[in-house]
Image (tube, rainbow, N blue to C red; front, side, top):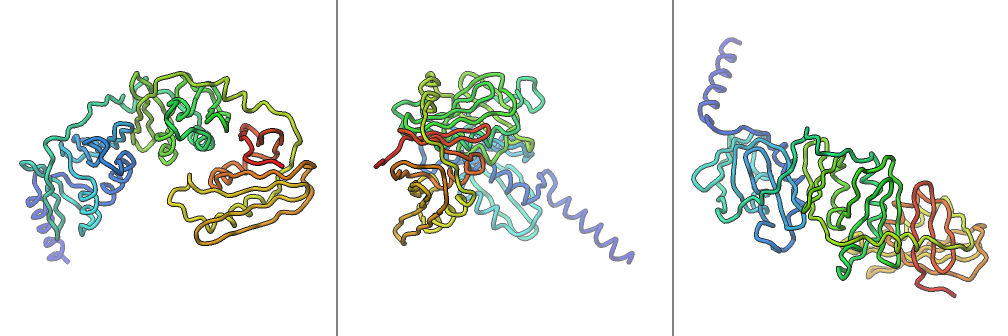
Length: 361
């Protein structure tokens, strides 16, 4: 036993000596940090920095001109490396313990069995985005349902950039609001925000996975932070949000329809054949008739259809609407009735969504 103990001590001392001056880090922790900042990596090189991980000793950054994401992690490294190759190398390297060292123009990664040197690109520099420290009083607390409210309003934002404000979600007081002039969504917040802001769609789409709990606004950036010390920043959009135009879409009177309890199951069934690459591009069709709601989908691999029969309170002509199934499944637990007029108004506690009809008669 004594010999084995001395052997381990000797081995440990030898390992320490071999990696003197290097930063020891767990592979899982490094991969997690890299994954947290990846959403700011653009699919195309819109800006020069958009395909790089940027290290600044205590953080890893990514940046794509619209988003900047950073995560606290002590690496002792300063410089930028190609994202795709670096991430793949860290993922494939054998061993749970990695030693990092910055050498002349390179980052050295070593484990007990592997060694790799990755070139630092000298032309890629950090953007100098100033984010307050985690304990700064500049941060303002967000309502605990903020990210859920933002996601519920995501699908009513305009995808066209002819009016940049409509490509945003408006956050003011105890309300989150979005519109593309044909649809509008509004979700109540549990507590009011202290300062209103427009949150761009590109940021709102990614923000949910971070569960931000604080926000700080400056002239050019909106900064969020979560409890894991991941900082998420997006550029501000100039312009004025059309609050009156958006809220006017909710003004309608008509027949009130009670939604069936099994609507979510029907949506889930018919969307199984949808094969679009992105959830936002998927569509299911709802047909509303007296005593009947029909859900159907149509894609390159086939069609699906489900009929929900039962008294629903509607007595008018058949109405057909196209909706995003991801969005509909998200809100179906928030709504219980639909007002049918020249538009549909879905209502529930703390949430409402209106959309113009695509077909009537």
